[in-house]
Length: 81
Image (cartoon, rainbow, N blue to C red; front, side):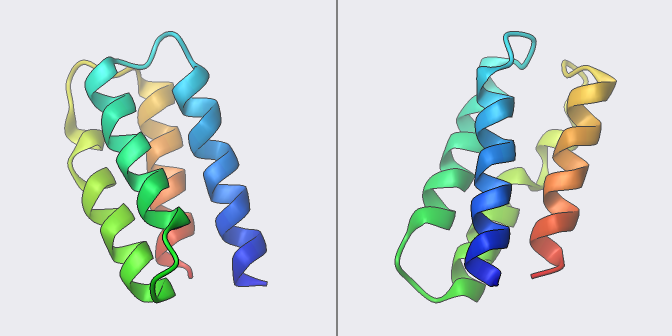
């Protein structure tokens, strides 16, 4: 069940990466978070690493409100695991 949720979160992250409006610095953080989730370590460790990467980007003034909402949704989904 958790693997299915993680795969859904990774798919959402991939959609963010394909969005041309998302700034490069945000894409870089999202890529790092995706890599963390794909590791074969403990689930809690993977989630914490991903949350660390996503933590500060929602405060970035250069991102669109829709992108900010998507990031908040990703963070909420990760915190629910």
